[in-house]
Length: 277
Image 1 (cartoon, rainbow, N blue to C red):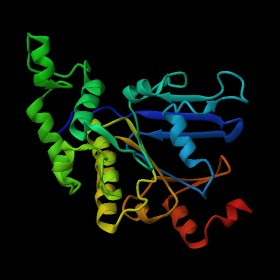
Image 2 (image 1 turned 30 degrees about the horizontal axis):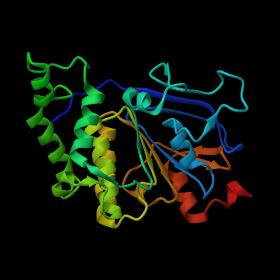
Image 3 (image 1 turned 90 degrees about the vertical axis):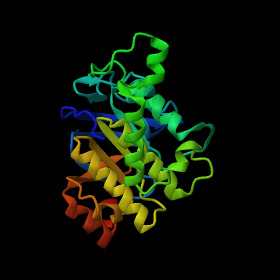
Image 4 (image 1 turned 90 degrees about the horizontal axis):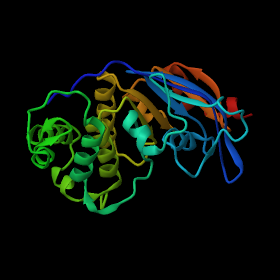
């Protein structure tokens, strides 16, 4: 089942400064990501990679722009500054974050999460949908403008492509799931919701080769559909399956080097010594 195509978007991160408990972690990170591009962010432990992911989605634990003049820090998606928006509005604007360590949520099934999120993401986007006069019946019949049968087929198709047991869709979110299943569910959300930009925070951690290939396939599908991708990782292993357009080295809260995919191979061979000395 094909989803509606969208025009290419641009995400501009400008002079991003972030602190937690009075400790500054990011010191003015700037990046520009365009639709269909893959950017890999690599760096040693404690360099601020996961902080960057959290701050992009507006995690309330982080103080942003603390040591900058008001207005210098910007997170601009298609010309709109998301800096002052809460997490849910950033998500509706088209940002998505796949968590490094997804938590279990009992009582809410994966399918309920997908259906509710899809409805919020695409409701009122101008898509053509069958006319249903009764609004209560419409909510039951349509999901974000799609007939519910089409939506279920869409989810099922992506689940099969990820080699994901569809019985998991009827269970609580990540409740009793293996590490690989959790990461595949995160990828399933990205594929179904089709954000403008997706941030994958160490989605390759703890995956066996088959799961890594499935997740990499999901990233490739998103890329082909015009989604901008940020992959946060320690290692090159996922980048062997998804070739990035750009690799950024983040050390002590600063982007110290940007290069092509060859930079990731250099890191694998010689580590981060050159950038941390």
